[in-house]
Structures are given as C-alpha cells and as structure tokens.
Length: 345
Image (tube, rainbow, N blue to C red; front, side, top):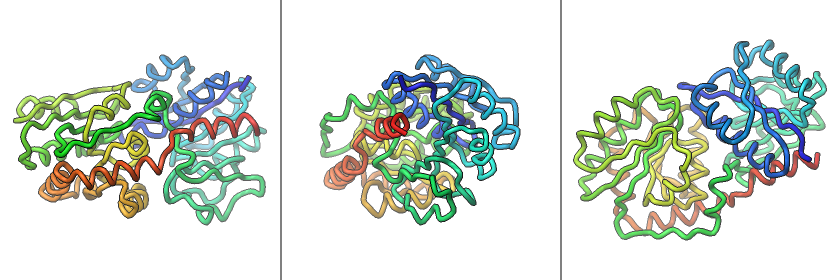
C-alpha cells in the first residue's frame, strides 16, 4: 500500500492551473499504486476542486497566506495528522523557509521546481521536469537532497497514456487548430490568437479554443467566436484534452505544462511566452525544433503571429519535424517513475 500523498499547490487567474494539474498527474500515478491523495489549496479550490474530487481525491482549503510561515505550519500539521507518506509542494510562492519548516516537522518532502528560485533546498527530492533542468541550478542543497531532472520525469495525467502508441496523420494543409493559453490567460492572449488566425486567409479552418477554469474572458471570447468567418468552438473546463489534441492538426499554445502534453501527443505547436519565467524553456524548445516561437504574450505583433501560424499550417515537412521531435522528448512514463521513486524511498 502506497499510503497517503499530501499535495500543497494552488491555481488562480495569475498563476494559472499548471501546478495543480501536474500534481494531479502524480496523484493519479500514486493512486494506481494503491495510495490516496489529498490536496491542500489556498487558491483554485472552486475552479479545480470538483475535478479533483471526481478523481476520488480529497480537497481541503488553507486560509493562511499562500507561501507564508503560517501556511507551512498548517500544511505540516495537517500532513502529520494524516500520517502521510510524502508531502509534495509545487509553486513559486513556496521558498526556502517553507521547505525548512516542513522538514523540521519530520516529514518527507518532494519539492517541484522549474527555475531554481530558492536560495537553498531542504527537500528530500527536488523534481524539475524541464528541458533546461541541470544540477548546476541547485548548488545550495542538503547532502541528502536528490535531484530528479529533465523530461524523463514529465508529469502527464493518466488520460494521455492511452495515446502512447497512437500514430498521428500529417495532412498537406493543416486546417484543424487547437488554441489553449493555459488555465487563466489574464491578458486575453487567446483573443489575439483568434484575430491572427483570421489574417491567415486559409479556407475552411476549424478552431477549438480551450478556455481555462480561471479565465475571466469567456463571455468576450464567445462574442468574437460568434462573429468569426470560420468555425470556432469554445470549450471550458475540459477533461478530454488528449482527445482534442488528437483531433487537431496544429496547436497554438502557451509555454508550460501544455508544452509537454503537446510533445507527447505529437501535435506540432506554435507557442507564446506569457511569463518571464517561461522564456528559458521557450528558447530551448525552439532551438531543439520542438515548437515555433510566436513571441512574448501581449507584446507579440498580431501580423507576425499570423505569419508564423500560416507557415505552420501550410508547411507539412515542418509539422512532421516538430511532431517527430516532440515524441522523442516525452515518453509518457514520468509520473509513473516519480511515483515509484517515492514508494521505494
């Protein structure tokens, strides 16, 4: 029996849903080993809580300021009461002091990280699933701290794994477009993408726009979609993202958790950077010819976005290359590897 996995992560309009969704992937893999998962959340309970509960995961709300000393004390006390096997912490608001409080409580800690943002690492395990992850990012850590680094450990949710041996068809002209800007998109970059698609002048486009749980612009996007010259479907709070990716020819997406999902699904993407901490990952993905880079969020020029997207839609060989390189990057077993590592430690 794997025991209880205790997860501390948040979601919201500014931070998006990526931290919670990748923790969900790990929680699913833990369940598959016979364990239980509990989420403690300060933000995102309303938008994602129901999804987690449908996965038979318990959700509790923490009232303390996210990332504060009081938050850490509360998380540690709750985890101890449950006699948890591991506590998993994921989010940029969680710092060195947060880790220290957890460890001083006698708990085993997995800290999910992206850019080495802490001054020192007290966690038993630091997991960085990014392409740029490197041991040099963690010069200040405890002697016992283990590093799980790279795309070998990408956390993919259970629903993706049935597509492991699926073969993608690459049409001469791509007309089925999936647009997804993550769970929040506060600057409504999705609207810019729709306007760019209107400028591509490619007939018979079919566009599915995934609107995240924390996106505040749904009504405005509905209005624009109803007035567009090609077919646009808006999908909100989707639970079938792999299916939508399998039906699309290309994606226009933000950098983040979705990047790894697209790579696994062999779906060639054009990406936008929506936060400064995504820039390093975006540049590496571009350099390795896994994505086309459209620019930096709300600062990206509409005409430039339209040109790059049109290139992707019309160039079959380019789409083949991006699709192939993505498959080499993510094999889909990352969540299973991490869950096994936790259960054996």
